Length: 614
Image (cartoon, rainbow, N blue to C red):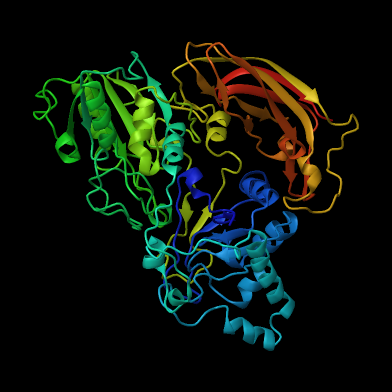
């Protein structure tokens, strides 16, 4: 079942913010932060991926815990009825996040079709905001029966359309969410299949490949990588070995659950029940045995952080020619990030190992950016951002380390030099969250507007450690011959024609008006995957408000053999050229010159051109 998780305004991770779980209290108490977003930013930034999902045929969406412009997301009629169902033409159903419902009539009228888990109390059966409550509301005329019919149609239509009534797999009773979050008596009504069914088939090969493909090579000096049968490797860090508390944890805090052991998945709703786990140390042991390499390790971060580096690490002898340090950062909903440092003294561990070993390779397993004060240390010769790579994590990493897979991953965020370089939305009127009845409390004003991540650094001309879209390869690429082909008619209008509403919104917004082509060549000696990226600069007009210097409008992964070249085409749709006019409530193509910027990252622009659309 195709599903989009969460709703407009809960993209807090983009700005390193927070997700606030609702309290157990119900009533007039304010239970969540309000994400306050202006109309233009809502349309051009936060609604953009939702429009893509709706156009692609997504069948369900989830509304979130937070408030959006002071109204709870699951009873926000502007967001659910107005933006999602009317403007974007969403034909599926909206379900609440678990416990994100605060009312019955208000929510059903606002456009929430399904209440989860169905009861007011989170972990036990009992009364519901929906169910009999809505039956009573229909009977007394508060809610029209047609709205209940609409919700039922929205829920059941995709059920049959996607064939969930035809030989759909039965539930595995060993499923973690079933056992941990399930509510009686509903658990007894499910149809269960066999426990612990091995559904892996050839999925392990795919997971392994995906883990390698998602690994980003940030630094590679002195030919540190790929490794070529090194004689002596030492592995450092508590992220390298087996998790001492097992392979499954639904923890929201991570308190002590993961100090010792590899972090392959996130916490909370980002976790999964692994059928096994290939850790970095496991995979390196296999490769070391194959190559005849001496492999040593210290996994105690407390010992490593407090070590006398002048004396070395007593358990490691002889001095390794290659040192691999793995560090990690826990991530789950329900908690703010206290800082952007790796957990368990990770920074000090890297710095101590690098002070002792002149060929230190750092591997990070995090959900997003961390600050790297050691990145420019001369003894840190390579850095790999591997993120959460799943059960084949160790094998995926070793494939990249040894050149079995040529890294091609690109940063989906900027890594700044310091925590202070990041733009945070400050929470105002932050009294005790679960005690206040002040609706003006707990406000997060997204005053940065469109200037998130690389747009912020570009607009204010700030230096960064590693920019958005950045990522190295074991080969080299060039880009040239950018060309602009106009497909739009010469009498193109600034406003789209009124063509009604289809899934995704006005269908004319998706008309291709231009095609941009660029030639990409592998100038190195081995095969690799290039990722050319297209950025578009809109005409600057103060009456529009702040306009980003450039906005990513396309990228494509291109496999190229040594010396091979290929022409890549990027379509530009009407909405790619438009801005949202909050006064006219319409998408408008501005007059003036558009800048076309093609490159391998947001700050590695290789070829430029331009055009005027009107």
